[in-house]
Image (tube, rainbow over all chains, first blue to last red; front, side):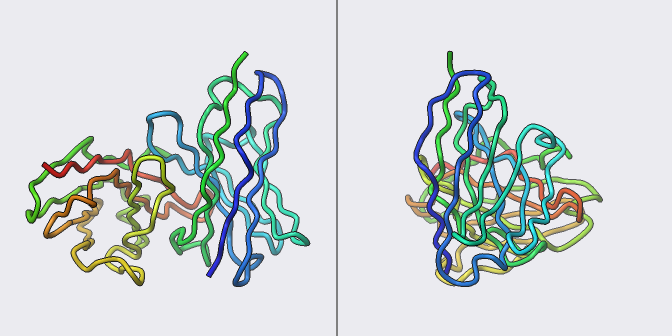
Length: 119
Length: 111
């Protein structure tokens, strides 16, 4: 079994940078893909993209390409989602989730990190 | 990549069956059998209900079932229970470059 624990809620101003984390524990964390999913207030789930910790192979949804960056630190079983310049429209809950392969579903989810961007 | 289309809401009485549809294209749902469904209760993370169109993870009640025809997938909840009131999202693999696309989400209400 895999457990995913995400970093705490953040409040930022437009233009600031941010990096949130997703720490995994349990069975074979680095050999599973880690995905990121956005949920804006009162809205549905949006697939942002995915990264494979073993080699940092990353795929981005066209809607998020160039807007965010995925990274991992294998030594501490942690994946990151990063913004270089936040916008108010980035206000949302961000979930990390884990899957075995490209074709598998997300079978383990983090608890979510609320990011609030406001001046 | 456009979101898969789901009805905004469906409802049913306890014990009844409800079906949630999920319409995609020949590039996603119609191209493979990697359709999954997630249940999300308010304030909670999504939970995997169905994967590979019809398969249930261990622990998911057998009153949840999935199917697919052409570019449309469906989730059926048989013997509706109060705890089934939640939002439901379909998801389909859409190719090796962008991987997945989610549906727009359906709110299931138990009357």
